[in-house]
Length: 349
Ligand SMILES: Nc1ncnc2c1ncn2[C@@H]1O[C@H](COP(=O)(O)OP(=O)(O)OP(=O)(O)O)[C@@H](O)[C@H]1O
Ligand code: NI
Image (tube, rainbow, N blue to C red; front, side, top):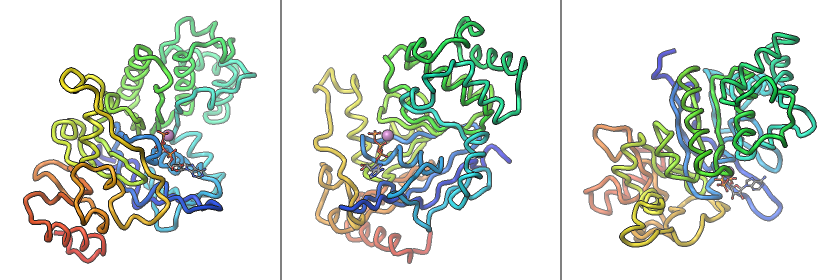
């Protein structure tokens, strides 16, 4: 496989929760790729569908949630959406590891850290006995836990928050994954510790040629870790671009608002900007722009025409789903473009 080929492809993913009261389109037709060895970010406010995306990839959507049949997720060439639970367990054991915001979710409080890492080594790599103790020690050392051998005998509560997250990462590495999904792994940690964990992930990525899907609501963290970024809003991806391009040349009004609300960016001049209002629950079909009610640039058509991804750069792979584009065209022709793409009748030129 070449470095340019995606290891993970998400295509038209739709994850819907059918609750008694409403139908929530938590992930509403999103598509993106992750290539070998790169870090792809998903960023957006609370409720935008980031975690549901991660859980869909991991096969962790339970009733009343469902991945709709038109959706496709391929990992290493294999379609994941039609795997059985047993097949999925082996993917989770060896192919894809996941690190959550709360390390407690991955650690069992009644077993020592060493026990848990050794158990993972036994199940996933058939390593036992003395060899397992050695490998567990190596793993703890490789995630920067000092005095690793002794700390294997400690329980999760004896670790600080940052050390606990390191231990979870060591446990993930015990499965020798190719792919890591990190869902807000540093959100609960203070800033210094957060930076250390991000550095650790970068180091491990280089050593192991890991591919990473990194989820956060924090644009500052995205700028630091991601190679390419998907900006998510109310279940949809609204902009996709390489990270430098996204910050130098944000095109979707939502991305601009997120960048303006980074602490420090504008705070000297005009005080911290925040986006007024919150993400709506996506409980009706998206036949309009879901950001329009909060958008400073919205015009009449935004309430009636669903925006499609259009290219916003001649040189760079950069798209935005917004009726302001293609830029420079009159409103009527832009609307035509979006309607045609939405129908699937456009000729793809
Ligand atoms: N089990 C569920 N049942 C019903 N709705 C759900 C369920 N899980 C998630 N949702 C809904 O799906 C939408 C997306 O939620 P999700 O947790 O993916 O957001 P997020 O972007 O990860 O937000 P945060 O930054 O707060 O973690 C929300 O409207 C949420 O209420
Ligand atoms: Ni989340």
